[in-house]
Amino acid sequence: MNANRHGITQWLDNSLSPCNAAWMTEDIWPTPGGQTRSEPGRQAAQTRFLTGFNRVWPGLAGFGRVKFQLLSAVWLLFSVIPGSAHAQALKRVEQADFGTSRDGAEVKLITLRNSKGMSAQIITYGAIIKELQAPDRDGLFTNVLLTTDSLQHFERGFNGAAAVIGRVANRIAGAQFELDGTTYKLAANEKGNTIHGGRKGFAQSVWTVEDVPMKKNESSVKLVYLSKDGEEGFPGNLKTSLTYTLTDNNELRVEYEANTDKPTIVNLTNHAYWNLAGGGSCLDNILWIPSDSYTPTDADTIPTGEIRPLKGTLMDFNKPTRIGDRIEGLKPAMNGYDHNYILGRDKRMKMAARLVEPKSGRILEVRTTQPAVQLYTANHLGYTAVCLETQHYPDSIHHTNFPSIVVRPGKPLKETTVFTYLAK
Image 1 (tube, rainbow, N blue to C red):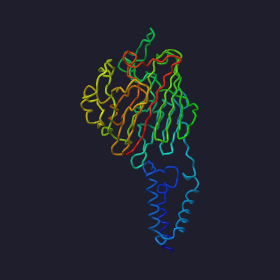
Image 2: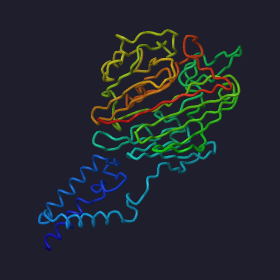
Image 3: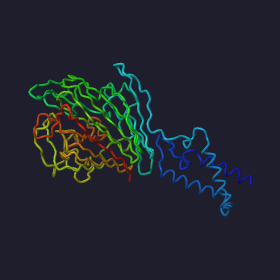
């Protein structure tokens, strides 16, 4: 009996560590390397528990009641340990300080969690998705966004931020536009053109957290930014509301609404840099974009105004294709993909893209009400991420055949994009 007592003590130390006992709790326990184990891990731990119990005390195999009482005692032991995951309710939304901006504004960090172990961290600087933890086929979680832990690094221009871009995402030719007979001059921050809202766009501004009603099986945060009349040269006081929602279906929903007191132009997106492996190159990722046409550009990546078919081109992803298969063919004219794919002008929710990381089994599906998606393969970062920016067409204000980006008083812009995370 002493030998058995020593045996079960050793087995409990090895097999009932928090990681192996994770199946007993409602939460996810951490595993080595900062990853976490989800439902498959809990089931495997449960199997190891029962198998180990029979191995250590085989004589109890026929005594169901005694065995049940012992299992119940072990369960009770872990359920009453102070600070155990089981004793803590799921905190769906938490807010913390993330520092002070150069302008003296307090920056907040909001964490959203769902019941499946996923989490998203949002900071109020740039409305940036700082981190998103998603599971692989084995239930192991890792961050799938390029990021940094430093506010100062974000402010200095971190090149992979998952920030909200505005007032106008992408490019405006000549850094000016005409609206209702008035010409508005903008900051020329790229080759004589305006890109991503100017020198200080929405991505470089501090947003304000506002209350948002919580719904069952969802975790949400609402951020608001008031862009004043004349900011970066754009007309009108524009109030933009942005709601991030993490659902128990492993979806991150991004809802935009923009209201103005004067006619203006608006094109909003999130410039997330996705790396579904958690690191390394993305050239082996498999991409599908259900689009038949795109907007060709000139040497400065300004649309020519044409709409061309994709079939037979290097940009055609109508069939799932490895990103690296044809990327070299784009050179030297372009260093990688940076193309606008047309999805359709209707406002219904539609599939924009599916990205698969073969080694981990992680899958990202993108759906949107927007008419287009910009594929960018992080060319300036050695293809270490894939951007799928749902948007209106670039330079739409200069092309009457493109969907309009004009927003007028009483007629707010409303758009939604949903990122769904799967694993197979």
